[in-house]
Structures are given as structure tokens and as C-alpha cells.
Image (cartoon, rainbow, N blue to C red; front, top):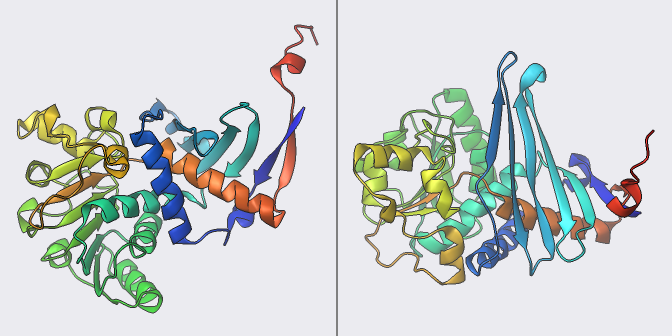
Length: 334
């Protein structure tokens, strides 16, 4: 019998800063770039009622953790439920179960920040954000830890949402944060562009990107989802979180493939390869770069283990007993 730690959203609140998430996630991607395993998500759907179940995982041997995400969306409840199981990479014993919803924007934002640190110009000072929800907020919180932005422009189709976003971040960041009335106004001459939407159509014109722009696109993790257009993919050094995702469920890349604008060889590297130094990141000031972030077990396992260790230090959470298979699998009838 072993005890695993159960951590609620309340337990996790305030345990780590955005910079802490970025450090943990950066190290997770480095391990993947050095050969540790991670694979794209699996998705299962049902109808009547509509629902989706998703799972993905990664093994981080140096961290000593195996873990990932399992979550549902929809079904009869019409909501989402995120569960993060975490195991010891050597013994296989369960370490923790986390309520994964509260950490989601931070760990996903951290992946975007790691990519921006590797792919954006060092002198990037202007940030454009398309989207104003929790994921957009997580991206900005994290990315602001790797670049000193002086100006942040946000566009969302709902005026009150973009205005609220701008007010909140204008108080939080040293940058001048303002809402604009179009994605074109946000993207024009921006050094870094973040898209965090559920759009099935491109949210800006790739011809509007200035030379040297870095784009983090995080809302295109299924075929048919296309935050960025074919032009953007074609113009850019294209880096997905996991290489296999590009032809599996990266909607914008699949659209570019279908249009004949690129081939599979257009994938420059995945983020782990860039972080580990086995593939170059940005190579010139005029290069346009894209990080295609669909969500992986890499940032999930890395962030969950960091939170688990901090919870132990702070004596947070409750325990759940687990019986090993040698005890539980008795073969007896009830």
C-alpha cells in the first residue's frame, strides 16, 4: 500500500509563479529533446450528449516523473473536468493526483513562453494578443517573464472582454497595455504575436506579419481549427510542440499541406529539439517563426511534479491510499 497526494485547485493556488512554471516546463522540453518519450493526444468522441475525452502523457526521467492529462468536455454536464495523475518514473508508484484545471493556463502559457524565449528576437518589445480568455491570460503572464515588453495590444471580438483584459494587464505589467478594434491593428509591426482562440478560420492575415515576428498559436489542436493561415505557415520557420502533431491534429499545418504550400519537411524541429540544442532556433533577425502549441504531457508532467514537490514542502493536500497490483489483483470472486 502507498499513499498518493491529492491536490485540489485551492491547494495549488499561489504555489508557483509564472516564472517557476516556465523553468519547470523548459527543463521538461529539454529532456524530450534529449530523447525522453512524449506523444500527441488521443481523443475520443461521443454524441447525444456530445462529449470528448482526451488524454496525453510524457515520461521525464531526470525529473523522475511520469504523468499527463485526462479530461472530459461536454457530455451531460456541459463542462470540463481535468485530472492530472503523476507517477514516480523509477518505481512506478503513484505520487499524486491533481485537479488540473487551475494549472492549465499556467503550464500551457509556460510552453509558449519557452518557445518565445527560443524563437523570438532578443530585442522584442511589442506583443500582440488575439483572444482574451484564460489561455490568453496564461500566455501573457508567462511570456512576459522572458521578454521585457513595452507595448501590449489585445484584440477580442467582444469589446468588453478586450477592454477588461487590457485594464487587468495594464495594472500587472510595466508595459503599456491597450485594447484595439481589429486583429490587424494588434498584429501590425508586433514583435511577438499570441493567438489563443477557438477559431476555425485564421484570425489574422499572414501578409501583415513584419519580418522578424514570432507567433505562438495555441488554438489549433484539431483538424479544421486554423488560427493562423497558410501564408503564415509557409513564411515561417515552423516549430510544433511535438513533431508528430504537425500531421496528426495541427489544423493550420494540415491546411497548408492540403493547399500544397508546404510539405512535411517544412517542420523545422519540435520545441524539445530546439531547447536541447539539437536543432537551431532563430537564425536571423528577419526570420518569421511559429510555435504551434496544441498541449502535451510534457508541460503537464513537468508542472505537476514541480507543484507536487512544493505541496510536500508546504504540507498541503490530503492522501489517497493505493494498493499495488500484487495485493489488489487477488483473483478472488467478491
